[in-house]
Image 1: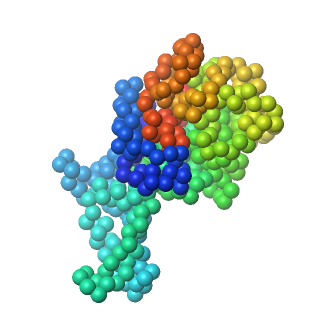
Image 2: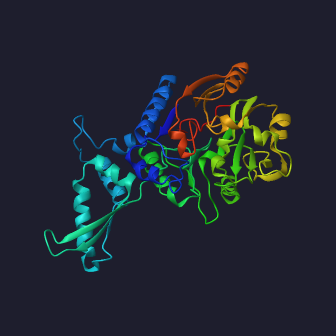
Image 3: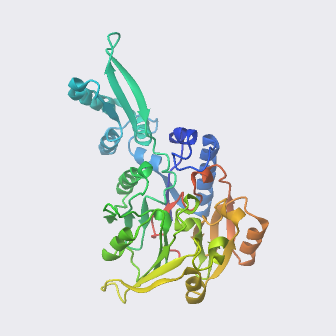
Amino acid sequence: MIILMHEPTDELFLGVMHPDAALFSDYFDIELAAKEHAEYRNALEKFGAKVLTVRQILLEGTLDKEGRPVEGKELNDLRAFASRFLTYNTSNIPDEAKAQERYKKMIIDRAHPKDLVKMIMLQPEIVLSYTESNTGFAATYIQRPIMNIFFMRDQMISTAKGIVIGRMHSAQRQLECDIAEFCLNKIGFPPIYHIEGEDAYLEGGDFLPFGDIAFIGMGLRTTQAAIDQLMENDLLGCNKVVVVKDIWDEQEQMHLDTYFNIIDRDLCTLSEARYLAAKGDSQYLKIDIWERESPDEPYHKAFSDISFVDYIEDELKMKVIPIQRSDELTYANNFLNVAPRKIMAVAGQSVALQEAFKANFVDVTWVPLSNLTKGYGAAHCMTQILDDGDVLF
């Protein structure tokens, strides 16, 4: 199993200075967050997974054993990519524009690979002006850090057909897809498709594969236009698509994997409020089911607006473990399934939930993530399984 992750570091600093603008729920300690992430990666590796990080992939082939730059294709590709993220703003000195482009290229060519990675993650803009003394230039420095990329689930979906690059709904996150694609191409997992179009948005937290079924959440972050592209272009590799329609539209449950998750063929979790919601309530979940008889035929809508709870219990014969509000707030639903009935979950859940898992023979590795969850996500959101399409059932 190959898992793609991103180890968060200094790009989080400005984000925790104003969490709302960064799409975070609260301030958190960056150093402790990085430690939590490292411990989570170690737990996954102990299970047997091969964990690759974005920073590791970006630097691959650019350094020798002593950490010195190695000239070659990998470094040239990294330079070209990093150049897109560094801006010399010459609006105050327009006559200097061409000279500053040459100056920027010189700096890029001389920059250490680790500094090139910092350019990508911090997205610096240098606003230049003239001064009458010293070097003749002064600058104001602006950063637009890529702050949410430690949630590597969202930039793509990994299906039985291959990897589809999504389209992020939030402006703060749009460049993450470009970084993900650069990394995927470098490690030999080229995407098979990109979601496109003004009204088409797809984020990976809304996608849960389940054998010949794909669950796709449609709500705050993913739209029907993107789901249509997946079906029209036969990108899912399954014959049934269950579109879970969420009208609650709350940030704390922006994706399907924050309120519903799968443990085994016959066992799942679901937010208790969603499980008990009556028809007409804002948290009541309805689904549309799209089907096809064979891969050679187009999908057609077989059912509209039927109960999600009834479908998983009566049609799929799945037992539901309801997640109480106190556990829901600490992302109990957002676990990573690494094998049937074996999950990596956020530590600190209630005794009642722990007992429910034990009663249903679920093997849980509890991972401390109390800082990282303040970014509105947890164990599932931070990982992207590449090698098997994340299809475990």
